[in-house]
Image (cartoon, rainbow, N blue to C red; front, side, top):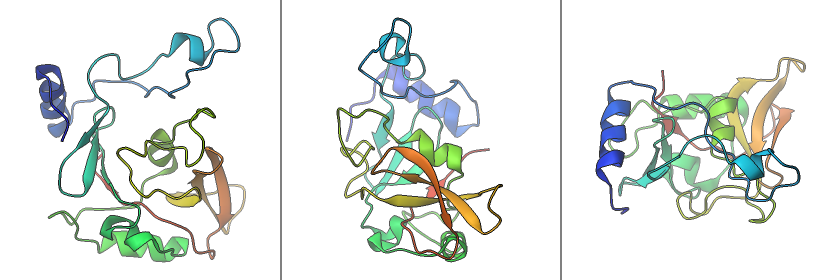
Length: 181
């Protein structure tokens, strides 16, 4: 478990009661290619404190968004590392009881992409592996349909660090989330 500062405890309480304190999360870029690019400015949350908190129950709380994520990509909150079609994933998450909670869902594309680390220096999978254990360098479903392809769905490919699309009939990985507005 991470040691929480008073600042982190304040943020946890604020998020618990629905306050949005931060804007967009940092991308995690550390290499700068031009003055004032993201690798140079490193703008976004967190400015202080920690971003992720290990709750000790198989979940991780993102202090930037207030979302709680399933931690282990091979655990119950990620369908034990197996795959499902888009519709199956949505239905599965709706009925999931995990870590004492029953309000789990599949994240929308912005939520899912927010935990992607977009930095080639770390290599695939492009996610914080200290917190999101056993993550696969593969496509994970979001709950967002692809508007330009009526039978497609959006997801994050943690092998490339990109948002991509797939036919909703394809079986892909899933990671449950809870919280949000």
